[in-house]
Image (cartoon, rainbow, N blue to C red; front, side, top):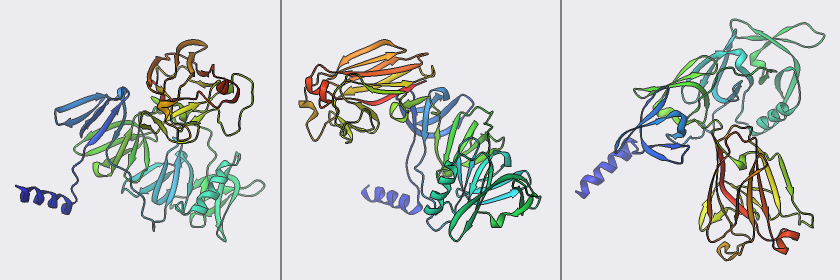
Length: 405
């Protein structure tokens, strides 16, 4: 029997077959492992050990199929950003009239209207070129630009980009006070189009391929081992299961507070505050160390010192706020031995909906309704002198703090 097991394992290793499962996560925190068999307009179906499990798309956060891998280090990469904010990493980019053809490293070929392209950059694998191009994009320029590499340095020229010739050799470019000319693509290292329009189609999912490329989908269909993606630019793209890495249905359904910018952040009492104590620590405790509550580590969360207040604008988009309230170890101290006098209070649109004294020994799970709330405000108060005047005591951590739709 032992020899048979070894033979099976050897076959799997030699043949490259990996026994694994697709992992689906829901808004409610449920995780389902199985094999993806079908996707319809309304649900995703996995085949599990207990049979088929159907999950409504409206309840799905993500479906993880496999980890993404790096593009070969010796490959030349052309990056293209589209109106829907996705960036595609391509082996080749070809402009033909009103269209542009992209060949991705996963083998997927795309053809889309040129008016969907925001920018394009060759040699995007080069750190120096990528950095300089990012600086160009950060400039507040309300004009089209062509990008030229000269003596190893990127330079841009402002003007107006026009039509591409049918053979894809040149693009029209007009500078102020000059005639339009046809610029050869072979002389360009990049293009930047000034776009002020958005995408009209409503996305339902982000599709990640094996190399981390993202396609924003307005509709999905999975049959016979192939995923068909209806894109925001009107094309249908077929992606084979071996090239599929992840389906991200979140699109704001679940948002961690540490990923939001506070609308308001203040101390609630006056007094001396050492500069090394932050008003809000994201994904760490106040000391900048990992969040650990009762020996459990959390990757996401926010920490606040005593007598501080943070407010987030929710815009009425969310229904529920969840977190695990506790004390994360500070400066190598055992958090379970820290006596906390901090009280955490939560307000929705100015109305108090929760208040609790933080306990290091007994963390508390919070689940609050924030339906239709415009603002979420969290305060930490303290009756301890060190906490009130110096901010040196009674910190609070809200691990996994998040709002969901």
